[in-house]
Amino acid sequence: MLYLRDAFPRERWTGALPETAAFWLQMHAGFRAQQVQMADAATRWRSGQLDPRGLHAALIPTLQAFLQHLDGHHRVESGHYFPQFRLIEPRIQTGLDLLDRDHDAIHAHLDALYHSAVAFHRGVAGQSSDAPDHAHRLADTLDRAAPSLTRHLDDEEDIVIPLLALKGASAA
Image 1: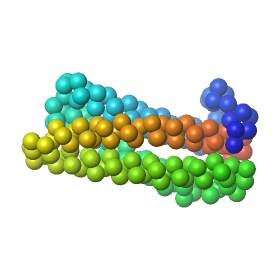
Image 2: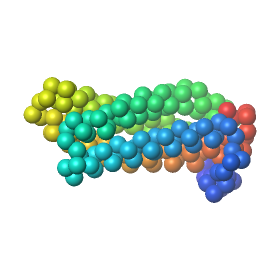
Image 3: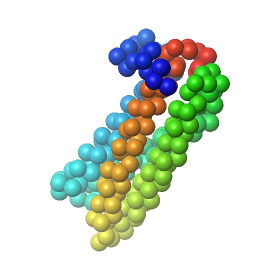
């Protein structure tokens, strides 16, 4: 699979990308930006700059959008693009299998984030004394999920963007 990255390295990922590749990178940039925004909210919580309500306002809307968009994105990739890529370029089967397994592992993180967020939301909405504990658990869950997702986005781009750039419209 490295032949794709070697044939079309990141340094060449500029304005000359096919529309689908540019859109893919735009989606991934959005996920990365949301991760930064959520990590920032967790950092502000941990430093005492936010109380539970402030963390709720800063984190929950972004987390909700992040969970929805990432789940939908993975469904489209695994259900549409990856099967198509397998036909177009059989040499990347192993890489696509890895990315599909990553989707499963990331889904476990998304599920944990969802459940942590629900517990936190209930604690804040009910003005429960355990809201701070739920906030800490949610922040810790965010920390655990981030490295896997970041690595997955990078790995996926190293396969998908060169494939789309080199194979053109037939890959989209």
